[in-house]
Structure formats: structure tokens, C-alpha cells
Image (cartoon, helix red, strand yellow):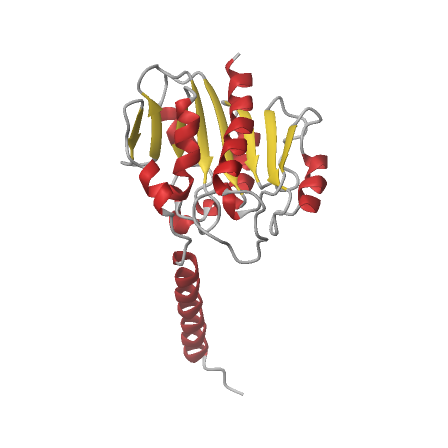
Length: 246
């Protein structure tokens, strides 16, 4: 039986092209920022916002020496996290959201390196992320000695990341009614994080309210407002930034 190699290769190429197109369409269909998020992307008297390469929130009344790098959740527009970053900047810290290719942090997990190189005045760095962004942030933190703190928003490290035996100051911030990064998953992640990890479970908080992008498929309805959840997220994050600044 004669095998038509050219025909087989054409079929395989067609399958790959089709798969690639479908993946691109899926990845491009990301959650959009809510109006409140777009409002937070505008500079005000005390916070300068720039969007040239990253979304940077910088206090204007002081020169920050501690910075927070943030990886967005999978398929979420990075601007959706602007309200949280602006509040963190109001506490005196540099806050940087890193936009990702196709809004998926897996495609640029080492992006924080360029941020760190670009801000030599920052003496202490924490990195964090929401959901998939947190997974990639923990991988970066485990392999980069420049990072002093790790903040996980509705997230946990991949197994084998080496976080548990590190000197990192770590916080796990989760929601009690999260339908995606469920309380059970967060509890199970304790075996991958240091014993002195700061644990914060936001009562009534869900997955989607870790950003300002609306509802999310598979999530549960939150029992508190988005603003209430924002306040608790920022408070728990700033604990880590204060800690590494000392």
C-alpha cells in the first residue's frame, strides 16, 4: 500500500492551522474591564498612571522604595485590576500590572525581570497575581532572588515550585465562595507554602471580584460588594509590602 506523504502532511498542517485559529479566537475573547476600572486608569493628583509598556501606578508625593509586580488572571484584560493597584499606590508603593500575550501569563512568565531592571531605585520587590497569574508569579518568585514577597489572589503555586523552603514573605488571599479557586483548593495549597504564610479568606468573596471585569463562568455569586472585597484585598496585600520594606 503506497502512502501519500504529501497528502498526510497537508492534512496535519490543516489541522494545526485550524487548531491555532480556534485557540487564538478563544484566547482573544477575554473579559473586559468595567467602567470603574477604566476610571482608575487615569492619573490623579497623588498617583501618576502610565501605560506605555506596563500599567504603572506611582505615588507622586513620595519616591517609593518598595514595588509590587502583578500578573493578571487568565483571559482577563489587565486594566481590570487598576482599582486595586491604584489603592496600593496610594499607600506609597509602586504598583505595576504586566499585560500578557493573549492575556495568558503562561506566555511570558519571566516578564517581571524587565520591570525590575527598569526600576533600579526600588529596593524591595513583591510579585503577585490572580488565579493563573498567581501560578506564574509564584514560579518567578521561586527562581528569582530579587523577589522578597509573594501575594496570591485566589491562587496557589504549581507543585514543585520550591516556595515552601524559601525566605519569601507570602500571603494567600482567597474568597469563601470562590467557585474556581475553591476554599478546598486553597486549603490543599498549604502544603506548598511556607508555614508562616499570611492566610486571608474574604468572607463572601468570590473569584471574579478579585478584579473589575464582571461575572465569570463557573464562579459563585459574591455575598459582598466588589468595593468591600477590593478593600480587604488591598489591606492584606499591603501587609506583605510593609513587611518586606522593614
